[in-house]
Amino acid sequence: MLASLLASLLITGSLPAAEHRNVVLFVVDDQGFQAGCYGNQVIRTPAIDSLAAAGTRFTRGHCTTASCSACRSVLMTGLYNHAIGHYGHAHSYNHFSTYESVPTLPVLMAEAGYRTCSIGKYHLAPRATYLFQEYRNKGVQGNRNAVRMARNAREWIAEDDQKPFFLYFCTSDPHRGGGPDGYSNFNDNPDRYPGVTPVRYKPSDVIVPPWLPDKPEVRNELAEYYQAISRLDQGLGVLLKALKETGHWDDTLILFLSDNGPPFPGAKTNLYEPGMKLPLIVRSPGQKTHGGVTDAMVTWADITPTILNFCDITPKARPAFRRGANGDPPRRTGPNRPVTFHGRSFLQTLDQPRAKGFDEIYASHTFHEITMYYPMRVVISGRYKYIFNIAHQLPYPFASDLFASPTWQGVLKRKDTLFGKRTVYSYLHRPRHELYDLETDPDEITNLAYQPEHQPRLKGLQEKLKAWQQRTRDPWFLKWRYE
Image (tube, rainbow, N blue to C red):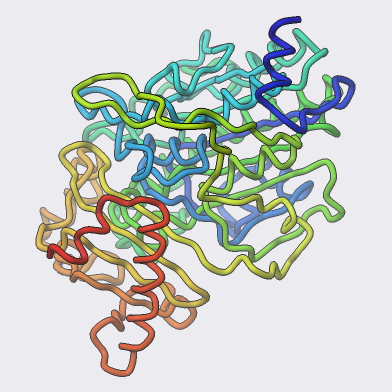
């Protein structure tokens, strides 16, 4: 009784007890557009394709930071990571984490009367700030047995049907393994993952995207990568079936997305399009069209506001805090303030093939591993994309697993001058400003930033970016003046 009273005080607009609006947020690790519904005719992804057929496929969904942990902090707060302190990886010596006073999606959902559960990859910190009521990870085998994960989810969903639920379901597939052996530790044994039927691919059959070189080692890695995607797809299929069998297909919002681009140089950790432009499939019980496509340009900062919108949850005002110094806890500094987000709900776009008002986004990447300092800020407005490489004096850094990959080691061994359509030199040594026309130059090869005729457009986008950095309290805004 006391708990429900507290929830009603904290939340306005909560759902009536009889009305369930459940949410499944299904996040995969390092997947690009490698799915049948996104035009790849080689890979077998029947579950992803079936979800797209039942919902809406976004063609311009973007992460805001192309790194696992930092991206997840954005997903779960609706705030850019430079504003909440989660600049890079949370695990090991990287040790980045979100400010303790930041309201997060699982906490807001629990306060609204939802039961919450995390299954699979977590990669957030601190735990108390991103607290779930349940963690169901028995037998998930490094979060790569998505079938077992889905079975765990079914058991949890069926346990208590009196409350609506929020399920955060995250696979480690198709992330590569650390080191030069890549996926072999995960793919070699066909009996490794009980319940999963291995789907293998011939390197000669895979589709090499234009941002990668067409070399034997690249094709071999892509074949292994495809297998990991087909493995997670089977888990999604089991989960979708579970929702139908438990009677929750028609009252559950399902979001399928990736945290960042494929685990290859040129994509992951980059804010070039392969690193930040990602799959997003949303199926809402209330949408009018099924199997539709929308061109709405959205980011993962929009995920939390969209989920709260669907659930009709408006967080009540909370205490304002000043961040503590020298390890001191945050201090309350004034009266309660409303919970606000940098993102916004895109629920209205699900039935809009041409979405008005969704044509401008921003991105912020600072670290991946702690050894990888390379802050980038991005604005995409209409067809033009501006990248501000704040640390452009430095050579572009590598994630440890990407550097060790056969793909990059092949480049070094042969002393290649090209990597995909970009020169190796230009990949490693970037100018301070990059400007691209994504309509005529989707591969971002021709930098317009230093061409005289594009100076008015460049300055306009720079002013937009500066204003956004000020609104979101980006510490790196100072670099416009200091350097």
